Length: 100
Picture 1 (cartoon, one colour):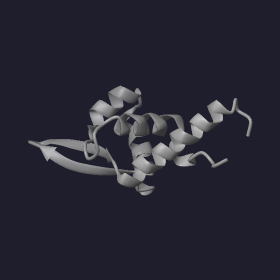
Picture 2: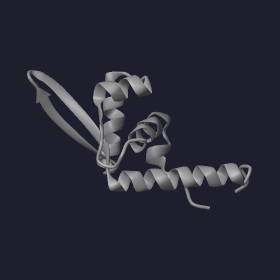
Picture 3: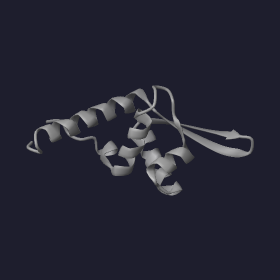
């Protein structure tokens, strides 16, 4: 049985990846929207996005709209693949009744 992805398995990172993977390929979410969807604080969300970015699971685009900073997070192809494998592994665990 394959291993769960330790990077994605952490609960907040799992929520981030689930939210991003629900979008069409190439589309991302603004930091504020992702914060609202996950219920995370700014600092906590930022730290977990950084972990996902270091793993190349997400791209982070920082820009300004007027004078206001804007951060957009998008799942990469590698991140989408890792998420799909993680979900498949979870399904395998569920289907086997937890036997492993």
